[in-house]
Image (tube, one colour):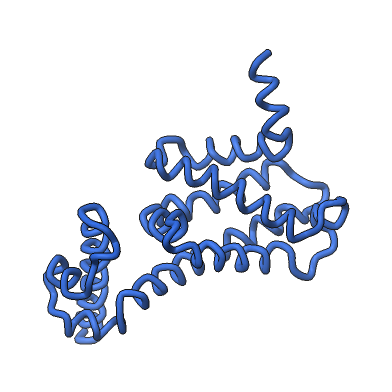
Length: 201
């Protein structure tokens, strides 16, 4: 029972730190955020903060790592859906929706770490992580039957996905993840310019 109480206290402390971080981000420049301000806003002392994190950067790295861990099963499922024969648009749509659900559940972290020009290294980490899952050790993905080299295909696929996700998160995820998945499916299958021309008819 004592262990459970201690575990609960740790969880509540980390939740307080996360809540304080996003409160400070809303109120001031991220460059002005210090452990002292974070601890004060979270109503903990600095010693308590240092029990869990060495510094602010380790806090950010932990948030990123947690996001990556949450995302991995959905990306693996998405890849497996692409590889299934015969291919099923419905399975791919469901897998895309799962990825978007993870983003929606972590939208504050996603926005702060992955859409933040000052933290571009997190985007590069995500790009490498995604490419390792999606394009490693498989010869029957779309890139194996195209004149587009894999690095360019991977960069295009992730960048286009991230721009749609960015718009969605900036709009506070007004549309459902299923709706965004259908938008991505339409653009990926038809291409943005074909779809644009069709909408003008």
